[in-house]
Image 1 (cartoon, rainbow, N blue to C red):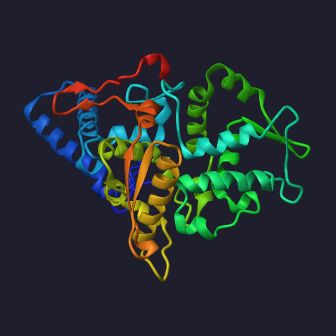
Image 2: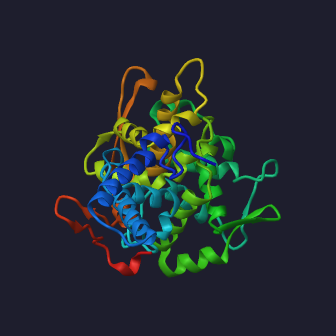
Image 3: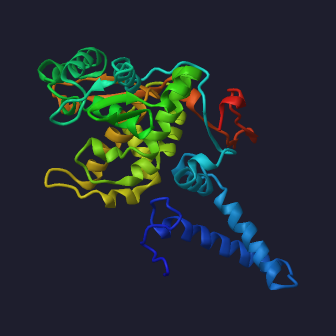
Length: 347
């Protein structure tokens, strides 16, 4: 089927075809026309080879809308994040001990389970009420909004959704199972924990959170799976802006400039536009509940009189640099930006 000018570009960038690969095709066509007028070819195969080279060159050009990335690099980010080690590398074992909100909850669950397991609640099969309340008391002091924490009551696992997510991720990672009404730690967990502790567990938790856990499970926005699919682009934004505290609105702006067609996936409401909802959704899922919850960024709250007018800033943590590395050509110096972490830790 032919791609229309206003259809989403088949490369997956989220842009309209006319603003993405169609414009690349036109540029290649113009260059090829010039080449054909200046040079003689002996066969159609030679013409095709020349066209292929021109297309590759266009796809490798840095794009302002992608913050200096090329269309090819973004395509690999969106579709082959873990299969392009020449560009993106993820640690299989961390060189530092990780610290993250999700890990505080995961460690709390793990420490409550002994050889006899942990009894699940009879009604819902969740974590026991006492554990949920104790963990909320500790967690809310560090990570919860003061106003929310002052009146929120935890009576079951569902009342403490961050804990519920942590438990779900543990199960999806193959570290936790429930049998006959009791939670147990798996042999997979015990093997990795005894060998390398959190340094070996975190990379699996990270990959599970990205690849198996559905981010839309957190909220009531439209599904918009592209926000999760573009997790590596969000990490790239953190690399670009994360040296200092930067307003999350900057991340929203960059994401929308790179992938404007994602707005069409939001349904909108009588009280807000699709773009406003997408910005809130992206900030919630990709920043607060991905970068911050997994300890890749720390957050600063700029409070206002009205809670919904609070502003937020983030910057990267040392954990970010230990988890992911980007190996790109720096256009300013023409050299590859290499990882500073020993390659034995990288995938």
